[in-house]
Length: 320
Image 1 (cartoon, rainbow, N blue to C red):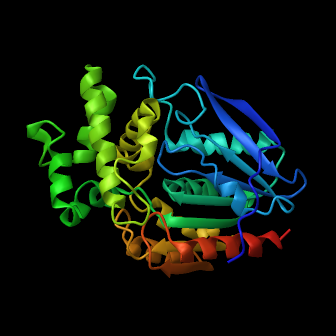
Image 2 (tube, rainbow, N blue to C red):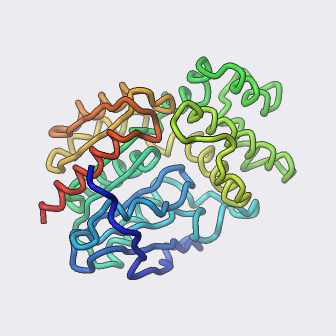
């Protein structure tokens, strides 16, 4: 595998007013006249990372990153308990992506997404297929009720001790019901900020448990040392998951035929406990022309996922 490109700073940044009192932070890297690409981060609420731009050849690509509503450097930040999430939904984010594309004067762009970013990428591309040139999607997650039930309950069979603690974090009368919805009620509706903070910590501990078998993932993850970022992450994940991303159950699969003209590369770890492999398989079979690769790693990927990611980036670079 070739080396990563050297660290790079954005050549342009800004705050875009997207309405509803929200302003999203964006960055552009690489060649101002290059092939346009946009990266949709995970979470929801994970914020843009610093490592992705090094995968894109800065001489060839014009890479756009942005922090979705409520996280990263976007405002208002969901790490403040007073921030209302009513205007933070999948449909708002799709509109934000389009507004950013128009603001930057981009006609079509490659869309990259991982984990929650896959759900958002698919929802955006199915709404605006003419604006998407290619797609690269890693660690496939569709945020259906079925996927959320697995994430918040079914996968607990692999982590009985951790799941017992996770389950014990909600009121006793809700422990046999929908735990994700129960955490959403605690994080986004409980009047006591101390109860909310404890729920945030319990939620991210559960997220850490699901990734604990993967190389290099410690618990607690160092990123949770940033308390506002932790709170924003927990609030946004439970908000989106408890509403199944405001999409009908199989909407993304049913509408995948709209992607027929868009080349897509899907890469998924067979040991991804956050999202079982059959989800990626069903997506590939619903999307004419999609290319699916299974690798041996988990949700955060492995060397083979990295190789396939960079191969796809380099291959699509030639499709100017």
